[in-house]
Structures are given as structure tokens and as C-alpha cells.
Image (cartoon, rainbow, N blue to C red; front, side, top):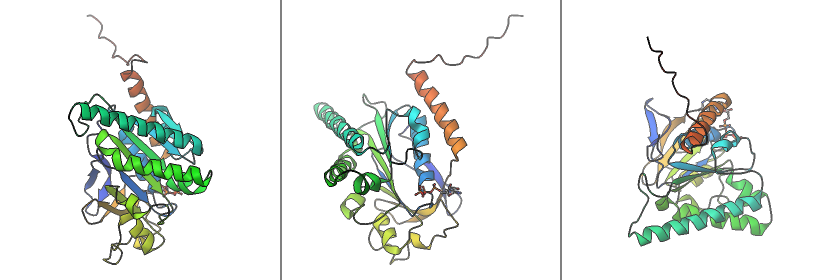
Length: 271
Ligand SMILES: Nc1ncnc2c1ncn2[C@@H]1O[C@H](COP(=O)(O)OP(=O)(O)OP(=O)(O)O)[C@@H](O)[C@H]1O
């Protein structure tokens, strides 16, 4: 698999597979607790983990939402704001170096099989780092660094996929929201939370994630940069499936890095 391939996320209203291109794009996932955000986030991380042309950087304040992918990741940050800020800073330095390289080659963006690898930066619960833990200064530092990565990372292969169960204007200001090419709103507690994820005015036009049944987790409205929302049901990977994919992806990665010998088929015996 490749991170340049569209990522399978579930099915649309007609039952057709829904795939979204993620390279050179970011994704925002919002919705109330239990609406199915982790399902989508895990599906995206699974695709990236199985893509050897993508490296993973995971931030998860709860540790357990993305914890299973730890063995496939370059970096895993738990509930530690200092580590989270350090990690985003390192990504910014890498981003600047990549831009310097592109400039020197007179190129504008990453291409398949490039000299540098794409990075998926997956964050479960932006609000944990941007509004809950640490000092005001540390939270602001996190928000500023994240905004920079979302704004400038795309062309150099840095893909940010971030989830929040608190879609409010303080957590996701409009100017940050608009930088996410893909936005998914699982069930939201009111029209205004739904608009904060999808964009202002969609609830008034009849597109509100507030009308999604609480008994239908994984269903939500997906919108692309310049499109209209569409109803999708995201795929759900249970714990066992995630663990199995993560173990397989970790072996693939170790094999590609030459750390373990690939399993060979036994040779047929001579007659
Ligand atoms: N696509 C789906 N199909 C069927 N069931 C689902 C789907 N997505 C989620 N669920 C069910 O809903 C439960 C909650 O989903 P999930 O953990 O993804 O929600 P969440 O929005 O991430 O919640 P939280 O914000 O509390 O982390 C899951 O444990 C699962 O049982």
C-alpha cells in the first residue's frame, strides 16, 4: 500500500466504498463522545501503517486510542504537553528543511518515491493538549505549532489527522478549521458544533451532524475543501483487528528496514 493511494474510510449513502486521498491534505474529525471518531482515526492510521512510504507520529492523551500502533510509529506521545510541543517543533524543523530542499531543486511538492518520506501526524483529542493540560503558554505553543504544521506541511508530505470531541470555536477556530481539506462530523450535540467542523452555514442548509442518531456510531457528514457534505458510515476496526494489523505492519516495517529476515516458503524437496 502507499500513502499516495486514496484511503478507504467506509461506505457512502449508496453503500459504495468511500476512499479519500490524504496526501497533500489534512483531516479534521469532530463529534461527541462515542460518535465513532476513533474508528475513522484508526482506519486512517492503519492505512498509513501499512504504507511503507509513510512514517507515523502519534499523539494520544489517553494513550489507548492509538496505543496499538506504537510499534509502527517513529514517535508516540502520551499525556505529556512538553513532549507534544517538542515533537511538533521537531516536525516544524523537518518541514523547513524539506522546503529548503524543494527550493534548491526548484520543485514545489512531494512526489511518489521521493527522497523524503511522508509523515502522518495523528492526534487523538486536540483539546487535551490545546485546552486542558499544562500552562496557558504551553497550550498556546501547542496550538501555534499545530496550526503551522497544518498550514505548511501538506506540500512536503506532512499529513495531520486530528480528532476532537469538543468541536467549539476555541478548540477549532475558523481559520484553523479551513486549513483541513477533509472534515468529518460524527454526531454533534448541536448545530453550531456541527458547523464548527463542517463550516459555517451548513446546518442552516440542512446539513447538521446533530440529526445523526446516537444509536448510529460511525455515521457522520464528510466534507471536502470545496464540496458539499455527504453522509458516510466509517468502517470500524475492533481492538483485535487493530492489534493484528498493527503487528503485521510492524513486521513489514522491520523487514523493510532489514531488522528481521522475511519468512521464506520451504523449498520443495527434490524427487
Ligand atoms: N462504524 C461503526 N460501526 C459500528 N459501531 C461503531 C462504529 N464506530 C463506532 N462504533 C461503536 O461505537 C463505540 C464508540 O466509538 P468510538 O470509540 O470510535 O467513538 P469516539 O467518538 O472515538 O469516542 P470518544 O470520543 O469517547 O473516544 C465503539 O466502541 C463501537 O462499539
